[in-house]
Image (cartoon, rainbow, N blue to C red):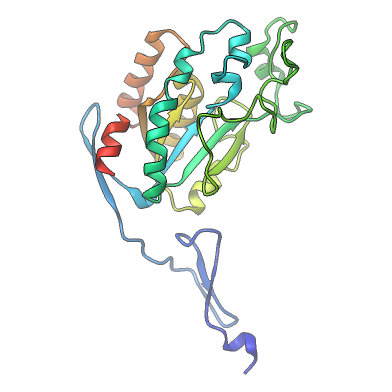
Length: 259
């Protein structure tokens, strides 16, 4: 008997939750059972129980260009104070989630330097006359290019730490799903439930949450870990629409108490 034939089955897959077991003689496609870890939460509408073993936290666009006084939004005159409100709740929640084994996925805007992943329609949203400072353009004060992948502009604000175990996904539009590996990563991890935080709640967070719902994920908006620089009625409309159509709304304190 050869050495390879004598070897037992080995795991084949990036995640033990969805890996096959293979050997020279056989391929076992039956996934190992995962014992559920239920967590019951009070939400804005009812009591909801999730399985922590199949849950991930999605943090969207907590980046310098959106949340830092020297970033893009501040440069064009937007009050960024609301965009910074999720920082403190995320500082408390993310370490507890990591300790519970919940994957943290950072979904951040990151343009190609040549902007070939940005359509004219998308560029027009942020630079309608073509003469302003839009996606990929240099900020006059620093020369930093707006939301360019790998730059200071696109980096997560220094108050939030990306741990080695966290996962990073670059997006190029308001939703984190089109033209990115986010869905493939979540399915490889065996994830069915998603917690959402970040900015802007009524734009990139909501668009990503909606697409997640359309793809069949269970969605919970962590309200105090998300915010928007839009008017207050946009926050209220987002909470209403999530509760009405796309999932549930929860506070980080409810998660922390359960954890």
